[in-house]
Image 1 (cartoon, rainbow, N blue to C red):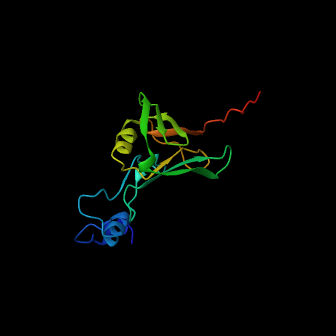
Image 2: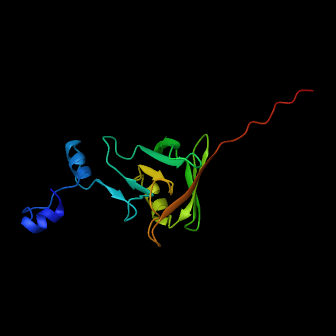
Length: 157
């Protein structure tokens, strides 16, 4: 039943828990542990935390193959995140042992802070083929790039 139905015919005496709250309870997450948290008020969520059995172990960073609705990305364990660099609230650089993940966007301060506390399980680039534009003033991830070192050729004499 929808919330509109409840308004017309009488709401339940207690609010219903969200799906992720029920999932967290079923998985036995302790009280006080983040249950759910996403940025953005519309359908596009640039980053967030969704509970899993192993809270805070991994973060998935998702971008899109140019001009398509096909996702690509990287999932890394937090133990491999060496440090995070930032430029204002428009760019983050996540340094991993084998690559640097560059995230460009707007309003990324909260994302940086939550990465530091290891309570981000996903980061995703906005794609106009998938979501409508987010409201002005909300965080947005406009571009994600994964930089890997290029090996120099070995020269012999």
